[in-house]
Image (cartoon, rainbow, N blue to C red; front, side):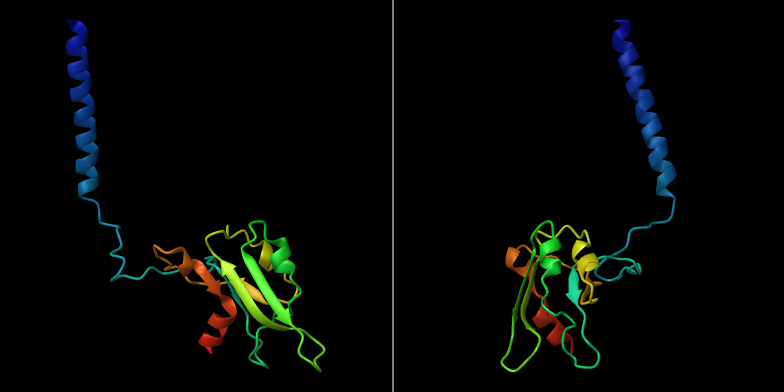
Length: 146
């Protein structure tokens, strides 16, 4: 019978402790951000998905289609295609796709690029229920940015 009362008093004690913590926190200022109406400030070192870097002189991507980013990616989320036009000395990037569902944001691709052709983007608001929305054509996105 004494075990019963020990359980009752132990439960009442833990309830009182929990309620005191709740009452203390109730009067502190609210720190929740009302997301759609309040936009968070993105830190400088934020790492979103990768994006291509534009050559300021030509307006085209800096990528020379060496494939080092694709080879260094441990998850195999990058695929690129380059084509050498007739009369040209260098390849031209024709397709650069990123499957963000596989990307682990490790940064190996950026470290392996000796030409500074890719960097982390500042995109943070990526929400969808479809897998197709996370396969990015980075060349098309670069052209859309202007």
